[in-house]
Image (tube, rainbow, N blue to C red):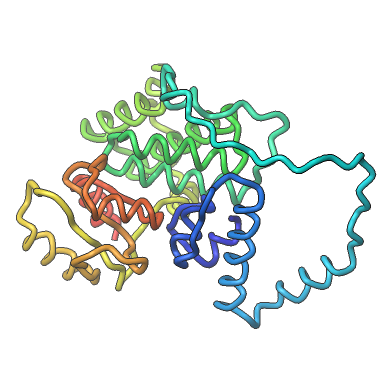
Amino acid sequence: MQLAREFLPGSGRKLSDCCAAYDIPLVDAHRALADAVATARLLGAYIAEAPDAPGWARSVAGAAAVPWPPFLGEASEWVSRDDVAPAGPVKAASWLDRITVKLPEFAGPAEQLDYLALLDLALLDRELSTHEAQALVQLAEDLGIGRATCAALHERYFDDLVHIAWVDMVLTEAEIADLVTVAQLLGLPTAAVANALVAPPVARTSKVAAASSERFALTVGDIVVLTGEMLRLRADWHAELTQHGFVPGAGVTKKSRLVVAADPDSLSGKARTARDYGIPVVSEAGLSSLLGRS
């Protein structure tokens, strides 16, 4: 799943997301054999896409040099695992409570940047939909990021926004309202907002540059698909997308970079397909925010 950063940038990191991107069937997910077969086929797809990458030869040579450990346990009869019905929806005070408390922590900087990028994307419209919250919880679980680290990353993200707001040494009412909204969505204490309103002694442009590298952004040529009844005329959105160098798409494919939905929690076919492919889904406000960055 870590290789998805290189081969499937911007998509989900779950095994199901990666397999969907290559049309690899994943039957009986979360069963050891099914997951192993799907993972092997996914690795084959990665190798086929970049057969000359030097890392493959090193990995194969390293694996060949490791002896298969002997089985020392007692033989027992094989028993299949029966399907178990889910116990029902998880009830939690907030989406943060669903992030596992992990000890010890094993996520590194690259995984944390992945989480920050998804967090930035989820907060583009300054709302957190049910699907976005679940995606953050799932990504934290997949990457091995515990609740304490997530809380620290949220503080880091908020701190980056504060530095961006203060880059001109002026904090407008709109910027203050924006910081308050983000702090509430991240579950930060009121003291964090109070500290944010205190002007720094000097504008820190280097901090802003570092924060920008963690943010989701569209690049020229990216395909953007709109779905649902928009507040703004779709033709106007298409014209603005084209003006910025992006390509309005009619349907969702694996080449799509972003889907814009009137309701980010929409169960429409396009939004469902986008989630299956690991393509981000944002609201119109989120699209406006992205266009403002480009």
